[in-house]
Structure formats: C-alpha cells, structure tokens
Image 1 (cartoon, one colour):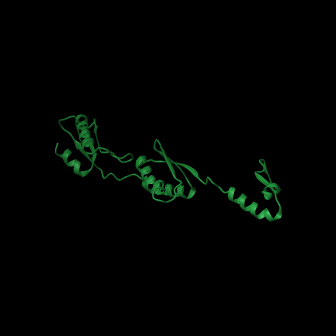
Image 2 (cartoon, helix red, strand yellow):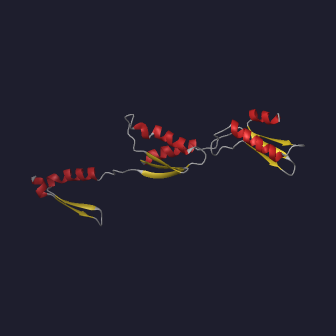
Image 3 (cartoon, one colour):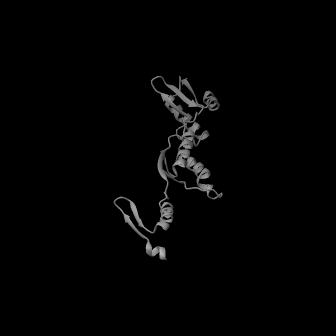
Length: 178
C-alpha cells in the first residue's frame, strides 16, 4: 500500500510509452511487471489459402484433426479454420500458419485420373446420340469424381461422326462392346 502511494504511472498515447515514477528499490519490479503485461498476447496471423484441386472440406477436416483437436487431446492449439467457398481462412500463430500452408500445398495437387482416350469412327449410328448414352454410363459407374480431376467423358465429332471417349481402361471395354 505504501508503494502504491509512492508510485505514479502516466501513459503517453502519442508515443506508446509509460512513464513510471517510483522509488529506486521498486524500479526493477515495475520493469518486470511492465514486461509481463506488454507481452504480445495475440501473436496470430490470418491467411487465406485458395484450394484449386482438393476438396476444401476434406482439407479443413485434416487441419482440424491435426491442429485444432490437439487441444482436446491435452495439447495447445490456437488454430482456427473457416471455409469460404473454395478457400480456407486460417487464424493461428505464424509458425503454425506456415505448417498448415505447407500441408495444404502438398494436398492441393491435381490427381492423375488414369484416363485413356479412344476414338471410334461410327458408320451407321449417330455419334452424338451414342456419346450421350456413353456419358450417362460413365457417370453412373464413376460418381463423385473429385474437383480438379479430369472427368471421364464422351463426346462426338460431328463432321466425321466420330465418338471420342475418355475413361479408365476397365470402362472402355464396355464401349468397345457397343
């Protein structure tokens, strides 16, 4: 209480400084207290990461599992992740933002779909009609293709009545049999 009466603190907003007037024996304590309170409490960075190929929900779930849920397992986690369209908005300490950015860069790559292209010159039937039927077949046997991945497809080149099919080899056998 006596120290409180002998100590005066004046903030200077223009220079972001504190002026502390206290007896010499309390100068060290005052410096320690100011250092404690002047610590960077919110040492976070906010970064938006655009996702081009991967499913943004899957990437967020992985980040949640690796970083956010660490708190539930007894670890420390200051990571917050929000999705907005095809982007992730990350709020975390700078070192964790870098770790997450590196992880996303590894995950967000185009996937080799393993597709082959085959052409069929049709003599009797219309290539446009066949292309529609083949397209329907491919969608029924290969639902849920990932964004950024080449999609199996069939289309017609009308001037030559040619059917062009892009699909995995195992599905091209069906088209060969038509």
